[in-house]
Image (cartoon, rainbow, N blue to C red; front, side, top):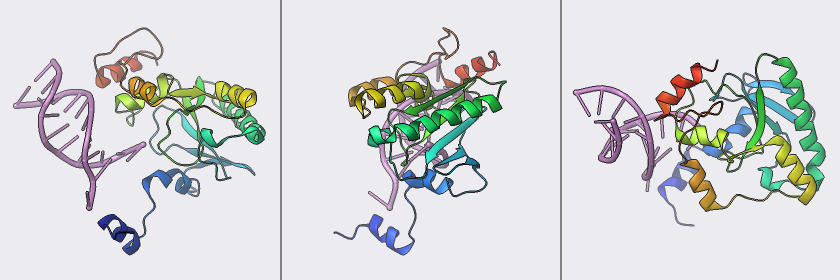
Length: 190
DNA sequence: GTTCTAGAAC
DNA sequence: GTTCTAGAAC
C-alpha cells in the first residue's frame, strides 16, 4: 500500500474515522439514555428536534441493509422501545425511522419529535433526510423485513433528487424560501 | 455526520 | 454589503 499522508496520520495518531462516531457515543455515559441487554439508546449529539434519540443494537450490524429475517425480533424490540419512549413524552408527537442513506456506521433508529425545532438543524439535507422518503418509517422497515427478509437500497438518482428537493413544512403546506424562513415558520407550530 | 468558507443569491 | 448555500476536508 502506498504511504499517503492520510495513512501516516492514521499510524502516528490513530484516530477513529468520523463514520464511527455513533459507536463511540454508545460508550459515552453522558449520552446514554437507557440500555438493555441487546440495545443502547443515546441522545443525538446534534439533535434536529426538541427530542431526538437514537436506538442502536449492541451487535455490530452496520445498517438496515444488513438486516435479515433473523433480525425481526431485534427490530420488534426497537418498536417496543419506541412505544415506551412515546409514553415517557406524552406532550410530544414522536416519529421513529431510519435514514435511507445513513452517514454513520452501526444500525440506528431515530426517535425524533415532529417539531423539528433545534439550532442543530441547519441544512436542506438535514430537513429532507427527515421529512421526505429519505426517512424510512419504522413500521415500513419492519413490514419490508418481514415480507422480503431484507431492506432494498434506494436508487442513487432518487437519493440525489430527494436530498435537493424543495423545502416544505412537515406540518402544513407552507413552502419556505430558505432554511432560516423554515425555522422561523416552525416556531408557529409549537 | 460537522466545520469551514467561497461565492451565489439576495 | 449581508445572508445563505453547497462542496471540500491530504
